[in-house]
Length: 149
Image (cartoon, rainbow, N blue to C red; front, side, top):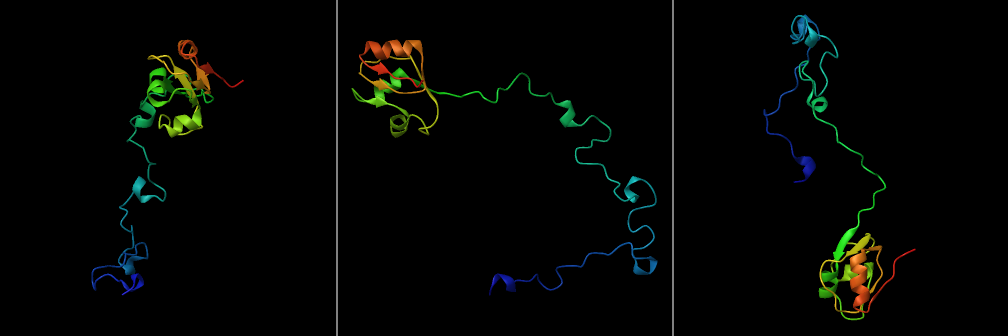
């Protein structure tokens, strides 16, 4: 048996009643639409979201407040304590190594190193941004920060 061989059981389906074919065709006169009014007219239905004259929900809800900057850059925050835990002494911290250490999801996401925690290892940090406190801790531990131009 193939998919194209499947048919409904005998007598389980009915053909649609054809209305509006004259009085001899059992669907004539008003064709199930009633006498007069909006429902009897062609195209006589209200659109989706119409609430009987009440102000629709989409108009009652407030719009988003404030300004959303389309050019905003979202940085992934990485703390100094995380670098201390995940990297060896003398390592280079960049997008590839952060992805390999499973700290960030993609090596192309912008990263900012923050100064929470302590750092004792000498690291070379090559990321998009570094906070002032993080830069001080990295350089105090003997490492260096290389920011893009």
